[in-house]
Amino acid sequence: MDVKEKFIGPRVSRELLEKERMRFLLPTIFISLGAFLLFISIFFPYWKLVLYAPQYPDGLRVTIYVNRVEGDVREIDILNHYIGMKSLEQAAKLERSISIIAVTCITLLVFTAIYIHNQYAAFFSFPGIVYPIVFLADLYFWLRYYGTNLDPNAPLAGAVKPFIPPLIGEGKIGQFRTVATWEVGLILAFIASLSIIIGLYFHRKAYKPLVDEQNVS
Image 1 (tube, rainbow, N blue to C red):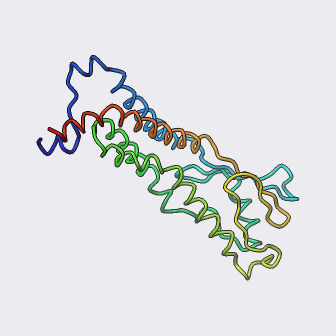
Image 2: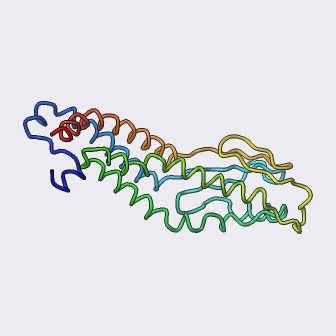
Image 3: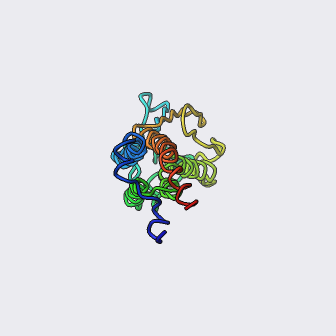
């Protein structure tokens, strides 16, 4: 067995491929679908927060993409200033600056798993599986950091206790009410993660017998 074959796994003979085409097609379909959905997710919003205040009965909205923040950012920053919260634009600057490149690289890694016929396929797929969870964990970090590190010298510093806005659902901040929702991009990322996991299941069923046979020989 040469080094290349040891790394990418056993070759599939033309006869076996023609005889059991669906067996080897299913992992390719699901893993490819996962990689595709993950990549297109970057063009859609991931998370949205609506802030309801007495002076804004219709609510102020901020929408988060992987690489930018849109919506009523200026108005929310003005309100946040009074309670001592930092500007939204200052949050996750590094993450937003590398997000497009990072997701593109993760997508390419997942696509690479299609051509790996052994356990290393899971290694290449892993970043795509955990990506939406990592996104939420990073978002939670910034929500917690902003909500629990209020400026004590702010005009209304004593009016609001430290808080953590929810990742999803309703929250209460003093006299304000917030509603957080997961948007299309994040949902696509989770579907991509599930599709990759299903693809790896079929990948194992398709190639493990060949790997075992290769190891025996």
